[in-house]
Length: 193
Image 1 (cartoon, rainbow, N blue to C red):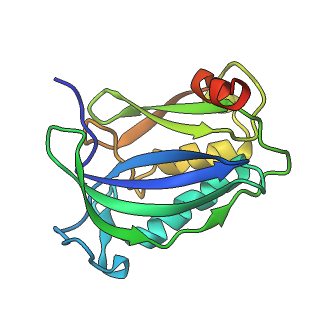
Image 2: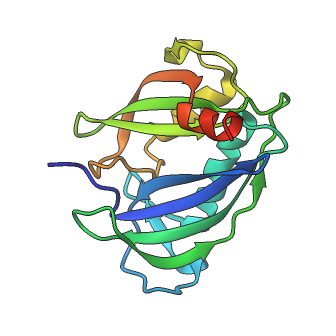
């Protein structure tokens, strides 16, 4: 049986040089907010069971993303969704206030992707993908080979205060590796009109 996103999903858009990338993160919302609920009243459940406001949680995560993206890269248009069980369908809950720009000192590397892979509590994998970040290498890295901003992101994702869930609805508990390389679909979109 496949793993599906949810029980809730946060989507947001990252953009640089005219191409938008939609990012999606599974999470667990405390309670069952109805469509249009003010984001200031919505909390996410962390791995340690404590609650964190959804807007504060997303801003803090994007603050960890920022160093990996050029100053011309921006994040925004965030939406909180409720996942329809056992499907890839979702229903709208609310929009989230998030407008963050990258702080990386080097320019965007067109068509590059970085995939961070984690082990979950249920023994599966969870991946966080960064599209068109500032990395320009094409190989795997272990935790010890990551840069400071990458380690900060990995440390948060495996910490008890993390709220991002895997599709198996468990939380990540260990870092496996970082994979760096070219995204062929984006390359074709950018360089083959």
